Image (cartoon, rainbow, N blue to C red; front, side, top):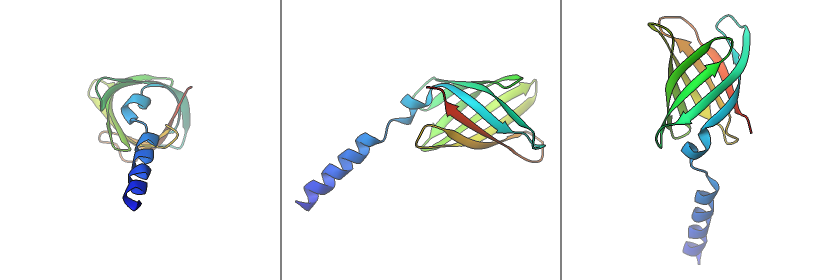
Length: 120
């Protein structure tokens, strides 16, 4: 009986956890804080290209594009601002689908923060 209860609990938990790659793509609102403490906002679009890789684009007063990857509850993205200027973001995927993270630009001291909230 205990084994059957454990199996049922395992099956329920596995059904309750959606596949992240299927739910991560789409449109997001962006709220962020720059290195100097100034706030910015805009939108981002994530397009899945495989089960764990994707393309991402931001419109936050400037446009940027990049590639992204999912690993467990981690979401990372690398992006280009101008020719030769690159950035990196690392987000935690929250249970509600929000991406909460930090970012930096190559060869620049400091980090900014950014939250992507799904637009439903």
